[in-house]
Amino acid sequence: MNWIRQPGVVAALPAAIFLFVGFAGPLLMVFGYSFMPEKTFTLKQLPTVENYVSVVTDSYYISFTWSVFLAALTVLLLFPICYPIAYGMAKLFGKWAKLVTALIAIPLLISENIRLFGWVLILLKNGIFDGTMQSLFDVSVSGLLYTVPAIVLGLVYVYLPFMLFPLVIGISMIPDVVKEAAADLGANRWQVFREVELPLAMPGIMIGCILSFILVLGSLAESKILGGQAIVMIADDIESAFTFAQNWPKGSVLSVLLIALSGFIVFTLFRRIDLDQVIGRR
Image (cartoon, rainbow, N blue to C red):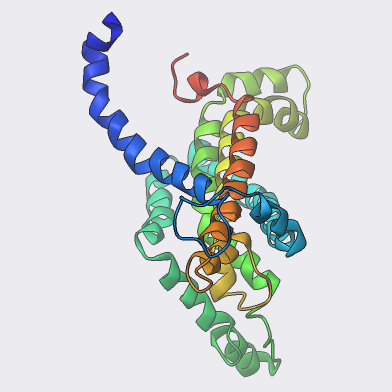
């Protein structure tokens, strides 16, 4: 037990207690509530698994499916959008890279809801985009708002920085001499990209994909503000269960399943990432 007296352990103890009380504690309570009967507000009832069964019988799997689909689609769209920008920031822009970084990061200082309502004004019938098209080309493009494409647009817009900045880190790890050596050996530009750049930048790519996927998986504002009732994502069901329905056990079981799915994805993919290489330890 001498390790308890080590200075490092003593110094870390307050932070460990804070994390347990503020993070692990609520998670344990949510896990406990997931086994309580419906409409229960105490942990003193006999546990049951009916809430887990109801996820299938009450069609909550549809919300999970939509959330996973939109998360995967957002990642697939973000990667080709962000990669050229990240490559420019890491290799081409030079002193202008800081300006590009600032322009992309500044919107993060504004509330996500405010930014999404800006898109509502753009996509609304007779809004900015529709009104402009009618004025210039006498063509109406109403009906863009409250659709699945509008939700995808909001997700791509909001979570673009979370894909972009890890990609910048990953691409900056690629030595230029390696690409030059591959070109000298006869590799064309596509072969250099496929055989050299992608493998070396993979840690940053994986982190960007994981981060974006997990954030979209638990997103709520985009589907409510831009999608209306077009679809219901799992975060919307969780919010409704904890608030309007006052069914804490149902909200807890949905939260537990979402956390389990996110944790499985994170731990599975992080096993393929060399974090020591990413943070520059070697």
